[in-house]
Image (tube, rainbow, N blue to C red; front, side, top):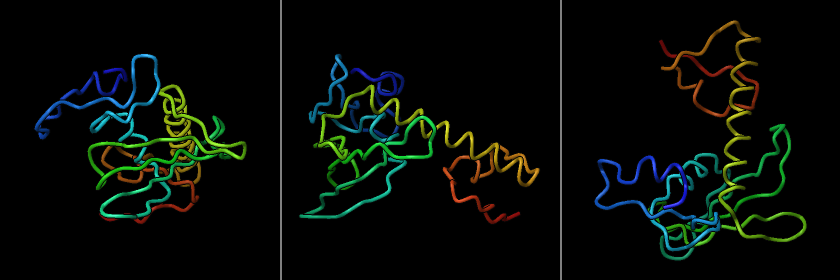
Length: 152
């Protein structure tokens, strides 16, 4: 295994076997993987999911800059039935497409975390409401500027 997320949780309790990390020791992507924790974390931010063929999915994640306000292309992955193996992952920009690396994925995840933190601070400033750890709105990326509906 290569990524810190797979090393930290190599075999979740509900898994029948160990994860297979999608990244080699040099940080390059390998299609010989199964349920990589870093790829799963990235796909929480997917903006598109197209079903094609027999149970194949193409998923798209915008590559945010560190400001969180603009995109630097997309990461496009292909997966079977939203589980298991990620067969391919490429970074698509205006200049072409490039191999995905662990470093790129970590930068994208950091940019989304910063955008999420900024969103939480903006929500507190706008409403005076501090999100709790049980508040679903505090754990989702909400860049719409609208206060989520409350159910109490």
